[in-house]
Amino acid sequence: NTMPLDGRPLIAYSIMVARACDEIDDVVESTESDEIGEIARQWGAEVIARPANLALDTSSIIKVLQHVVEVLEENGRQYEWIVLLQPNVPLRYDGWCEQQIEICKKRQYSGCLTVDTMKLKLGRLDSVGCFSPNYRPGARKQDLRPSYRENGVFYMVLVELLKQGTLFGGLTFGVICPPEQSLCNIDYEFDFKVTEALYEKFGYKSYFDELEKRLVQPVA
Image 1 (cartoon, helix red, strand yellow):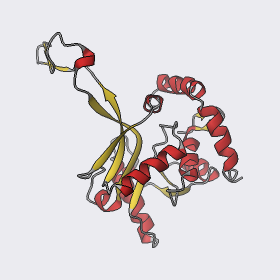
Image 2 (image 1 turned 120 degrees about the vertical axis):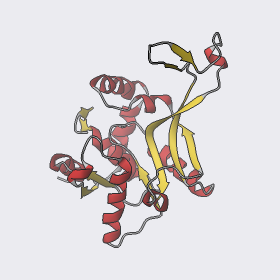
Image 3 (image 1 turned 135 degrees about the vertical axis):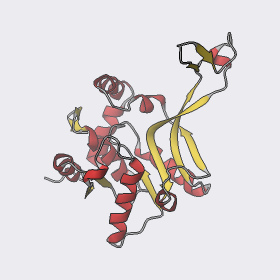
Image 4 (image 1 turned 90 degrees about the horizontal axis):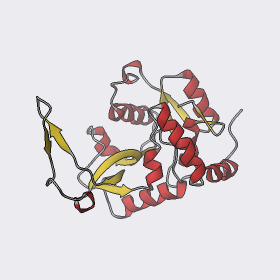
């Protein structure tokens, strides 16, 4: 989250987009790291200290978001919706995020998430390594029914549902985002190299340079 992308820490990109989005009232970063917390504040986010039991590799993002809501409500702040912009997915546009939020509210969905469209020849390996296809053998890939993969670029859910322990309600809107955004989901060094290349190729550099100028400059 602190790796520099074009001179900015990775976490700064999600914070900038959230701050620029008129449909987002408050920008909050949950972290157990003093370093990440300080960077988040410098870029304009409020920081909530994450408890140690929610800072493990196995910790559920739902539990983390529930903790954020709990802390905010303890301070008298009530929200109908929560939007999640994960810091390891840096390439988004504020206007695009606003559009998804407006659609979700207007159509009275219970939430929204981004997906990729995929046509894959998938199957299973049995205990001795033999392959069983989930498709008709010999079928062309382009003729397969599409599948949709949750890609982590954008989430929105009613706080009421989040408190019940889910990110997906009965009417969760699945939106197909630009392909370069879902490719820039950074977990490994290779992902970061891909992100650097797409950041330049698809014009995100100029967008974020202008966005930073639009926003109040980072706090010293």
